[in-house]
Amino acid sequence: MTDPDTLLTQALERARVAPDDEALRALDREFLQKGGVVANLLASIPTLPPDQRKATGQKANQIKQALEAALAARKAELEEAALASERSGAGFDATLPGAKQERGGLHPITQVTRELEDLFTSMGWMVLDGPEVELDWYNFEALNIPKDHPARDMQDTFFCDVSTKNAHERDLSGKVVMRTHTSPVQVRAMERLKPPFRAIVPGKVFRNESTDASHEHTFHQMEGLCIGKDVSVGHLIGAMKTLLRGIFGREIEIRLRPGYFPFVEPGFELDARCPFCKDGCSVCKRSTWIELLPCGMVHPNVLKAGGIDPEQWTGFAFGLGLSRLVMLRHGIDDVRMLLSGDLRFLEQF
Ligand code: PHE
Image (cartoon, helix red, strand yellow):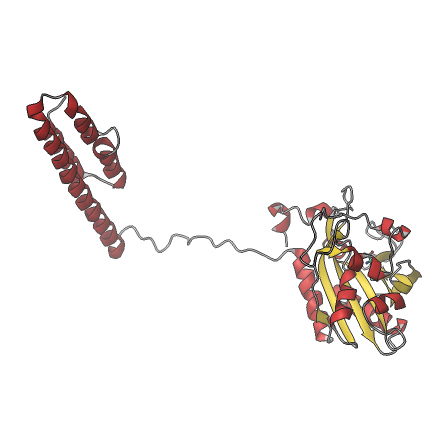
């Protein structure tokens, strides 16, 4: 073994001229850390003749302290030099392009949602929110869809596995669902607000679908609810025309067909004249009409469930398919792209 003094002299010299941090770390590993020179020296002590042990121990400590000091000093020197060179502007090239700022963008669904929120708030409507995990009561019962009603089949439902009782000791098993539409917020709104009022409710909804290009288990809707004195189908049509004008930027012809939803009576399917063609295209499936807005007059049973007297108040409701609208607007042919998180898709908006 090289004698300790020589080792120390060499190490100190290497520290003095170390070009960078990495060189300093290498010295630290070689001498000071586990398995390094100092540790080996200390480990050898028990094997030495007794009269050499003390000196060897002292030597090891001396190496440790001297090298630690040298490493610290060189580290400070290097830092100082780096700072000085930065301050002097050496190596700075003002003509190099700057670091690129990556900018995010809003999801197309968020864009449409915000536009519609602006449109409706400008007409005095409120924007409401409601829970995505919903009670069976709000999602179905209060909307005039009792247990075992065949209308439940129209909305394949995710039931939540809630086996424990909630804070009020109510047994919720089988009574908690992922909301299948935004309509439950109609009843929640009625409970909280005094009529007259008008509100839209954009949000996520969930259905237990096998997914394909036009079906997705999670998608977006925007509910609308207007409650007032003598609110009529005329008001409904007026509001829907304004909505379509806002979306497509011009007057859009509409037609009403009868539609069945237990929570409205009468209920309609509102079709819009295809904004993309005159005499049939792939979007309107050659019919020139696009089925866009299920709607109708709020059923008296629903008003009652929400604590509103149907003798005094009437209202209309609609359920705009936001996901579908975004697909129409941008010519997206697969609904699964919307929530895919695929940047190649998202960066186009
Ligand atoms: N909630 C219905 C659905 O998702 C749509 C709807 C809303 C129909 C409001 C009428 C009135 O299918």
